[in-house]
Image 1 (cartoon, rainbow, N blue to C red):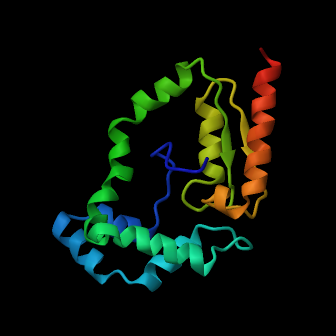
Image 2 (cartoon, helix red, strand yellow):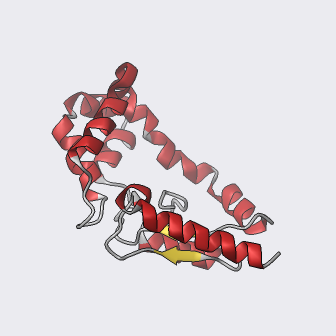
Length: 164
């Protein structure tokens, strides 16, 4: 599902760049300035316009971020998104050569890794199987429309079962 699979087309949010692509002292400073409201806004922006997260979901995300003082290392954790560029070629080759059936389930409204990520998947993966969800689904398809994600995954399972 949606994620920064291909770094060359991944579009990180400004907050991700400020936290993760700046020198450590600056990233640490930005971390200190993060508020619950800022995190809620950033998370909400990657959801579809009609599938915004509940306050309960946002509260849980904030709790997870703060578990064992995790907020203070956010600038370090976020670097992994950008470190993927060092492994991208190896990972793409693995995806291209695997015999394991794959599919990409996409929430196309996702500004980080939506339609453009599915387009790259179609370009790079042999015999790609891509399922585009409703065009109002964003970065968290499994939260925004869990029933549709499950139905889509079942469609994929039936498809590969029929090929055996």
